[in-house]
Image (cartoon, rainbow, N blue to C red; front, side, top):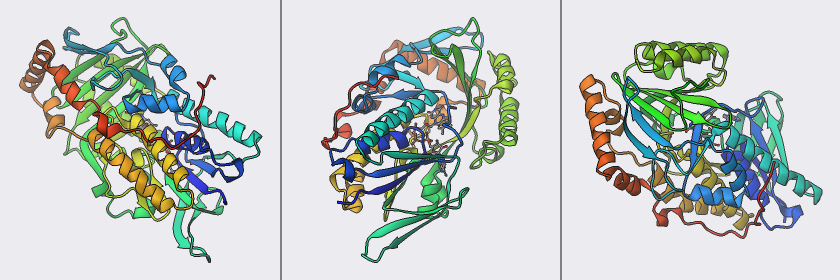
Length: 443
Ligand SMILES: Cc1cc2nc3c(=O)[nH]c(=O)nc-3n(C[C@H](O)[C@H](O)[C@H](O)COP(=O)(O)OP(=O)(O)OC[C@H]3O[C@@H](n4cnc5c(N)ncnc54)[C@H](O)[C@@H]3O)c2cc1C
């Protein structure tokens, strides 16, 4: 049987995890897929702050042999404290377990860049093994992207995907192209068409800046959350690994078009970063609490990352021989705390289905879709009006939310809400595809 020739677009969490799972199939080495991972950035992107691995995500990192290294790389966050402008704690909640309670701080918190680095190294270690056995393993291409994608049948009636690499100009043909290229996926736009993107990407009218700053005495191993008027929120979080404090500043606003404009696709250059920082400064200069310190440090922050908060919703995640995984297909937004978990679980189910149906990608995509729908639906659930209620406009609104959270914590009703949001067993079935078991990996 000829091996599948697969292109994975995007090297973050979903991309390398998928490549690893694909190489764990027990097919003979000569029949294992030939994988290329294409990343637009010239090197692995390490920006981003604390992200969670919850519920079935923990099972996935176990299957990748990464549980020990990921737990050892944890940010060390002990829980969340809501604070007033004079830094008084008015409510607090400790870190949850691995999924049953959907608490703000999950059992495993890790910096996004560190997780991406671990996933990439894991895939490279397995690639080396497969190559030693005579297989083709994984080829990595950084600093390029696709500017053409076209699906056609070959002379034998087999559908294939023809692509062009924008920088090198190379034209290549693949049996399957997988978009693991995140919220703004170009693969999705090229395969499904640019029209319809606004229906697929549901903006939540929230915009956020993520960066790290040097710690000060008020920073501890607890996350601090500060709400203020104008629907503004500031979060400071620990990262015991780097010794830095991570900051998340968000604003909910449906009217100010500048907030979306500065986040336009591919806006990672110096001018775009300067415009994003200036806008955030304008929004938070009078926010009080520790905003002066945070904004001062933001100016120099080299890991600054700005993003629209959005969810991706699609009726189908595949079109012909093109399929999407992770945020590209079903971004649940940072509000869900489920992005990395869905990316890992999606990578596992897609790889498993392709292993089960190596000659029939269409059947594999249908199976992958069926396995994922329930978990994605759960993760994307938002309480109607949640963002506006939890991010009030007025001083009275802030007082009300403060009082509400305090009451919910005090009465333990918050635990009940976290339990309802926790993963339900039936939505996280882990199908066994007969993939090889991996021992724990060490760097
Ligand atoms: C830089 C960055 C910072 C982030 N920070 C946070 C955070 O602080 N908190 C949070 O909750 N979530 C954050 N996220 C999102 C989080 O990583 C995802 O929700 C989750 O981990 C799922 O990952 P993914 O692999 O599906 O997609 P992503 O992590 O979004 O990765 C997509 C990858 O595809 C690459 N790519 C994009 N377009 C192309 C293209 N045309 N060709 C080739 N490659 C392309 C990107 O450079 C990136 O490496 C961040 C994502 C990125 C890219």
